Image (tube, rainbow, N blue to C red; front, side):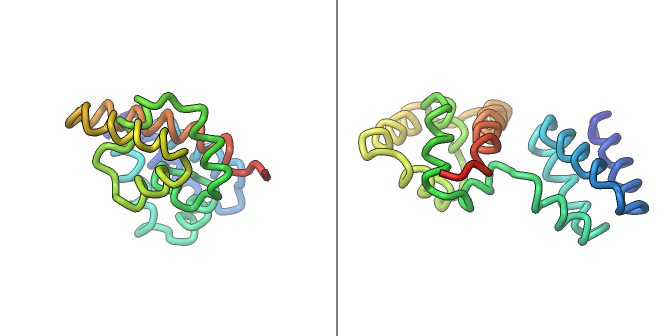
Length: 149
């Protein structure tokens, strides 16, 4: 576990003891956003078994790549306009069909076709590149998540 993950684990334990600290949850969210996806997912899963109430509170405020399926189509479309097509293609490699379908429905037919072509042409991608691309996409999604269109 990385130093950052160890600090997050300590913070979770402190938050579990003192649940009256809303700033603590915000700090935890900020730390999770800077982590690699594997550490992020490990911590979120551990938290769900350790403190389900805190996990629920965190999930309500924290946005992950997989949460894009819950976004309003108009918000998702605007967020995806900020992401380079090649980055989006890498981010979608190996994801669930429901996630890819949600993205494709928010693109024009031409853009969706070009994205599919990019994904087919690039072949398998190293996990670290996929995770970095997903981090870039998630940052754009977070900016648009609470925008009312």
